[in-house]
Every structure is written in C-alpha cells, then in structure tokens.
Image 1 (cartoon, each protein chain N blue to C red):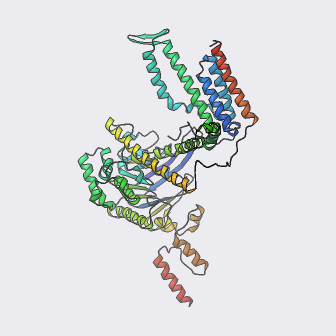
Image 2: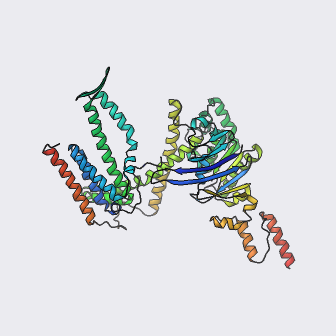
Image 3: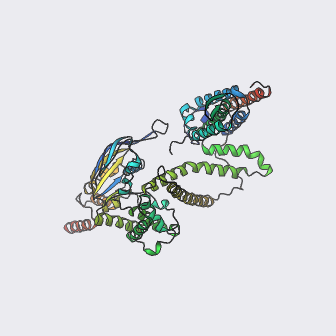
Length: 268
Length: 286
C-alpha cells in the first residue's frame, strides 16, 4: 500500500520540480492530446522520447515511472483476454481447437496499453515533481479566465487540493484499519465469498466514518479561520514563467503538431 | 508465553525511493505475565515492532518466536493465523475499527473470523462487555452512538473477546481524560494480575510507565537502546533526557528538591515515601 507511486510528490530538487506548474499542466495536456492522435509508432516514439527527457531532468528513475503503471497490469491483462476473444481480424497467429489468436487482437491491445502507459507516466511525472498545492494553484490560474462565464475556479481548485491532500491520509488510514481488522482475524486473501464481503465491509465502513469525521473537522477548521471562497484573496506564492517553461511548452506543442501532421498527411 | 526476537530487522519498501530501515537487529526477550513498557520517540520503530508480534508484518531478516509460533522471512499468514488470536493487538485509537450495526455484532466479529459459531461468539460478546465496564443494555445499541471513551471500550472488548494471552496496547489512553485513562489502565492491570496476561504497553506517558509497568524497553532509531526494570530506569533521569522523554512529575520534583539542598535517594519513586523523607529532612534541619 505504501509503495504506490501514482500521484505521490517526490521532493527532489530538479529542473522539472522548479518549473511553473501552469507550464507543466499545459505540457501534460498537449501530450495527452498528442497521445490520442492516432499518429502510429512515430508519434509514440516522439512522445516517449519527450517523457524520457523529462524523467532525466526530473531525476526520477525509469523504474519509478514503470512502477506507477503497476496497478494497471491487471486491467491490461483483462483487456488482452477480451480482445483475444472478441477481435477476429488480421492474421491468425495461433489456432488450438476453437481457440484462436489473431494479430489484430494483440496489436489493438498493445496500442491501448502503450497509450495508457504513456498517459500514466506523464501524469506521474507531473504529480511527482509538483507539490499538490502548486498543482492546484496552477489549475486555478489556468481556469481563471473562465471565471467570467461563471466557472468557480477557486472552489474547484480548493476541492482538488483537498482531495489530493487526503489521498495519502486515506491510504494510511486504510492500512491502519486493515491492520486493526487483521488483528481481529480478518483475512482478505483467503476465505469464502461471504467472508470476503464481510472483510471488505469491515474496511469500508470505518473508512467512511473517519473520512466524514475528517471532512467535518476540516470544514470547522477552515471556517474558524474565516475562510470564504467568494472573497478575493492574495497569494503567498506568485507564479512566474521562465525560459525552461517556454522551452517545454514549445517542445510539447511541436510534438502535438508533428502527431497531427503525421495523421493528416497519412504517414502513419 | 514469552516473546523472543532474534536479530529482528524490518525494511519498508526495499529497493524503492521510499526504502526505510525501521528495525535494525532487535534481539529481545519479553517476560511472560509481566507488564512491559515500550517507549521511544515517533519513528523509533515501536509500531513496526509491535506489528511483528502478531505477524501483521513479517521480518525482512531475523525471527520472532512466540510460544510455538516461529515467524521468519517468508512465513505465510495462513499458517500462523491462530497467533493473531493469541496476541491481541489494540491499535492507537481503536474506536476507528468499529463497523457493525450493533455492539454485540461488532464484538462477535473477531471470534467468528476464527471459526467460532454465531451463537458462541454472541455468548462470548455478552461475557466480555462487563470486563470493559459496560453492561448488557449496550449490546443492541449502535457503536456509533457512543461517546469516544465508550467506543474505545467496545473496540477493546472486540480484542479481549478473542481471549489473547498477550495483550499489546499502542497508546491505549491517547485522547482520554485523566479519569478515563486511569480506568483504562486499571482494566489492563486487572487483566494482567487476575488472568496472568502478558501486557506490552507502548506509551509516551511516563507516569503510566512508572505506575503500572515492570520492565522498560527503549527504542531509538530502530534499535533497542535501553532494556531495564522500571525501578532501575527511573533512577537514571539522564537516560530519559538522552532520548528526549519528559520524566514523571516525581522525578522532576526530586531533581528540584535536590537542587534546593535536600538529599533524596535515587530509588524513591513513591510520592508517600518522598513526602516522608522531605518531612524528616526538614525536621532534622530545624
């Protein structure tokens, strides 16, 4: 539970850590769109190259990035199984009785897996190099123009930052409750279905109770400090863009443009 | 049922950026039927240590021996599940483990997990509730309607119902008022004196350590720094200072008296005796 890499901030002192969160969010957005442009293998190689560069600059190891994908392995396996059973086009690679594997099934799965992996790794780099508070400040600033049309940017940012802030707390809490229930003989791995349902219930109910407790306390604490989302606020931290931010933005836009032109020109 | 550990070492998240050596070669022998205090600063490895005592954590290297259970790297939980019944672990703020609709069901949850029948588990729940100072009327109430202190009692009943021989308590009095804390400690002492249960108490409260415990084990940075009897431990105020622990009031009072010219022997730990000595010395002085 503690080694979940997804969404955790790693306090390294690197170029990427020091980048402006707005730039990082925009870069992530551009790359995400690029991933969804079906630009074939060259598009993905471009994106992967950018990711490797970002990893190098952020002092994160490739292993760390790959570990963040680990929780998805189960989903990917299911995907592969479904694709093998459903997709029956392309070249048949394997035929045992009624069971057959076609090339398209494998290609399709690989395609989705690569996309998912790239997306998760990009997100992981963002969250690993950006403090949650900076991240939400960035989101708030980026959403600011939309406030004119009634979008409550500050409230959204505050909700996101609270949600992010409580992820590790809830993980810790889950671990604690799991331990406490394990001491009472709960065994999440073995046992019948009924026992397992009971085991999960014995986790979820206390987790909800404590989450609501915490929400209550937090709301009180915020109100006691005079928090009012409608009031104008000043900032302790002022964001500023530097050359590295512009370079990153330009690179990511270039990648996006490349991917789109590959697609449009039909080079894929 | 004594607890032995041999070169017990635990590393969290080995091979990741979060790798942390939490326990570093702990060799201990915790005596049966006694009350042993485990103290140390936050992050000293106390909690990691106690989680090894009912195999919530398995050692990275070294071993733990409790009765005829042997836990070493690679031990499967399946094979030693019964150990969790023998060693009752009461976590900090145990009230957060309550989840059932009624107190009766919640207390009966533990025994049922270990294969006791529904009726028997309910009977056990009825039997254990008075031990924690609540009566039958509570059985059908929801645990979420209770006060904080009562919830904790119910949660502790949920552990006691398993009839553990060893009781491990992680800060059982945290967040309770002084009276509630004292009642709680009296409850544990009764279990120790009347039923002969071995008690391990993780605590920051030196008053409790002084008043209730027989032995003290001090953890520091994943190692055992001091292992001694309570009497000896409190004769060395410098030990407590070294590990940043606030000594009990009587030790501080003794220090102040000595600075003012009184001569209080090191082994005085009772307030009554201290008062007597001070009276005598005042008399002689006059």
